[in-house]
Amino acid sequence: MKRPRGKTEAPPRTISEPSLTASDDTREAKLTHLKDGYQSTQEVIKFIDTKSNILIGMTTLAGGFAITLVKWALELPPVLSASWASVFAQNEEWAIYSLLLLGGSLLSFLAVVFYCLFSVLSRKATHGKLTLLFPVPRPEPLSWKQWRSDRREKRNYPSHQEQIAKAIMTLDDDAIFAEYADQLTIVGNIVSDKLNHNRWASVAAVLQLFLLACAIVIYFAIACGILE
Image 1 (cartoon, rainbow, N blue to C red):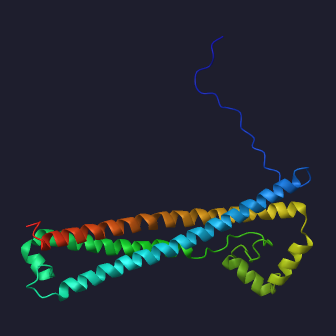
Image 2 (image 1 turned 90 degrees about the horizontal axis):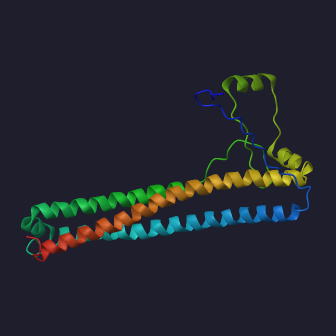
Image 3 (image 1 turned 30 degrees about the vertical axis):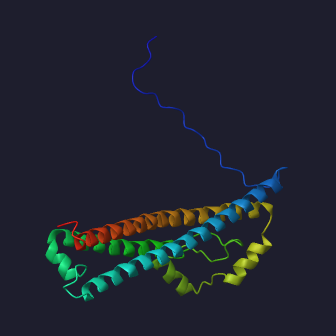
């Protein structure tokens, strides 16, 4: 018999959800591993924040040096070869290139500050159940209709203290595992965002230093008569 032409649909794959129960013999090992994972992500977050602060400090010094150099060149007497007036008179084209490179360096500095600030800014907690590892209320946003209904019926929601007390009362081995799984998801997303912003900040910092170095080399090459 001939096989029918065309693609045959594959049977649907069934993906089983991972078990978060702590009833087996590896309970302690699993819990220790979850704690280690949570601790390592906290250390990574601290490292990224420290790196962001270092990048801001380093690029601020470079930007301040660039501004000081511009001020120095503008204040020099025109008779000196290193003054801006003299450099511009010797080679207008390359002097403009040097100025554009310096402007690009300052724009890169602003990009570094922008990305670093986004890296260290706190993120809004995602909606979900309050956990003891992240004891911040995370209610689902209410629609305008639901808000009016709650206000009309004077419906009261549990306070922050009541939510924590309830979480403590219902805490068991399975709940601990579920809390760690939820928290690892949250901090994982935080680390991913921080790494992305920090990576772009590092690229902008390298670009800032490179453009500044090129601008300085071209400027003094004109002042020394190398580029005429």
